[in-house]
Length: 97
Image (cartoon, rainbow, N blue to C red):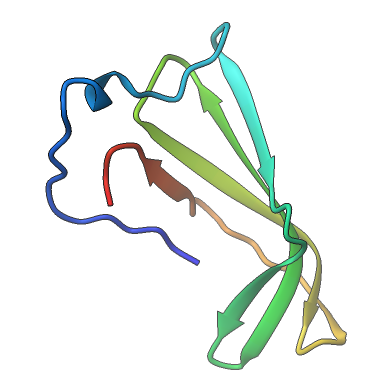
């Protein structure tokens, strides 16, 4: 799953104040799916994993770059698999569609 935004987003003055914020910095963010395992589709088939995502926020920002970690992976529904994401991230941008 990749979130890719292209183009220019126009925002109002009120929307320009929206940002990911923390009470203190740096802030370490941890996220996981509330819907269960994540399914990665490949040309060879699907891989299902437990996923978690992490980022460190050093200041208020309109962008988060969540680095995924996948564990307990099963390929094709039964085989143990390993997913390594070497430098990949899900990038979230506030104010863009």
